[in-house]
Image (cartoon, rainbow over all chains, first blue to last red; front, side, top):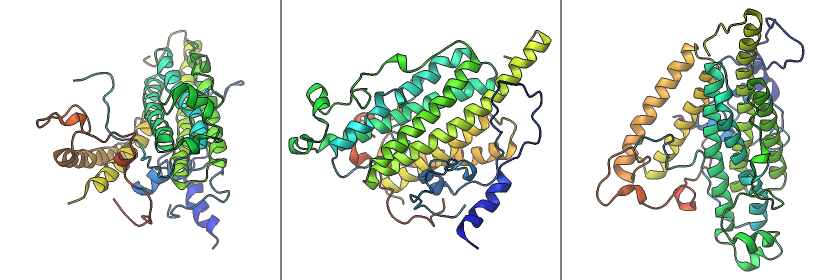
Length: 73
Length: 200
Length: 95
């Protein structure tokens, strides 16, 4: 199994896919609510800047050759 | 003894920089006193607090505004340590000279190009929706700045705290986004029933 | 017994864990699991703070002091020597 799969699989189940927003209105922005899932171990979360794996490097910048932390989420 | 804020005598994340680098200090200082820096962030959120509706939004602005002060201190520590043992030879040709003639090795809130800190860097609009949209954008701008700084950094002692700070911007964006959900619900409820249903 | 840097590191790590949960709880005030996690971490951090302050000096001015007044002791957080080193392979350290 490649490395991306081990990271992506549990993460995918951690991000709630909101099926419907109530009273959706135009000209409003909606950020989906997080739902507590796994957390990094305390020291690992500290080094990464968040204890929440699903919020770590959401925009993918760290993964561009900079990743050197523990892969244990 | 009990005041608005209690100083905790430690950094949120350690700053321990062995190698002087006035060039990097001159760049990182933009997160001390620049348009997308930590001082602007803190004052922005703390200034906006009274306009917030819903307990979630008030707490979010209060606590993120407070965390930004801890980041302000981390950036200050980085700048101070990057210059403390720098010799005049290190400073010559580093780009730090214009700052040096005005401030020596003192930490003064300016942006990278030298403009002093200004409250013009943020708004407090008296409209909770408007303010939260500003805050979402502010977190993104700060994240971009940290990425640009990281592109220009090569010392692991500098990179580690910058990466920590970059990630905090993402977490804060999420929290402001969630606070915005409550605020938008509150405001649209109010519109339909004329009176707010949720306790302000 | 842990040395100063080890103790400071664990306190910092636990404080950070609590802060990230605190911000989460502000927008998820009914999440019981998160509250429980938060309470556990805060309790543990409090114990370690007391241990640190007994030996290495005041972390906040809310504490009692020996004479002379310990709050002014060097170093301060912005100084190199105040801070602990985060280098090294610590991936398997559990707190």
